[in-house]
Image 1 (cartoon, one colour):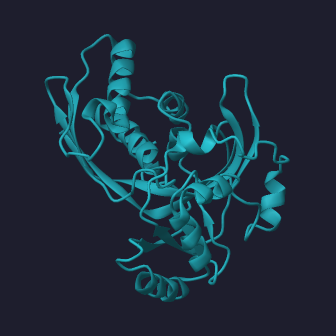
Image 2 (tube, rainbow, N blue to C red):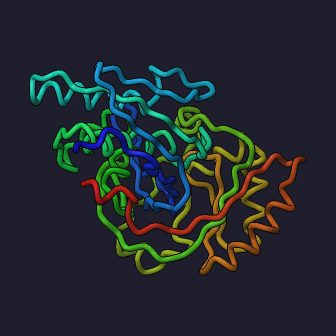
Length: 294
């Protein structure tokens, strides 16, 4: 019997272990180099087939209209692609999102949700697109979406879509959500953003992954949002603390879960109601949990 649903589909967060802005294209897009790291913390999505061709987001999402949601847009894009390939009406889907990742946090939550949607519905609808074809669809939705479909940790270049698989170290992370949401456009549009960092090679990172490079967006984000700077200063006592993506979340790596748990307990005590922090620990992932669907 053909399955009519897929439940508990993970949409994991990512961390940018470093993020360098190396230039800017004529169309305004920034050229980047970064290492994307998957972690075992994220949203959960649930999909149920519909027979009427409608794509519907069952769960409400504060501040995001259904038609604007990357998850819904991803499903409709795949649906249109399926129709174009087969000339048959594509089924619809009800999509429920258990949202754990913050918006404007630099963790790739919306992009990860979109990628999980493409992978899950490609399987559930029997569309038959390859991983490469799904990545090309994902790029139409956002520069980070192809990474989550790629399914492995990666050294990324271009606008983030040129990916090379990369072995990263097994470790744990403590992540702070400092209580602010950072609009990506404001960070990349800042006049004082560094846009000419010298390009690096994969081997440069692989030789010294701990503390490698920096996040060129961090200086801009901390100038605009003091809570990010406070979170970096706090986690910095435990190791190399830095911001991920365009912010606002801050992370620090630990060799094992016990060390992470100690730092997390101290962080939760320090970042109580006055600071409006949320904090959690997560283990590094070596591949996307839905890689088996490819």
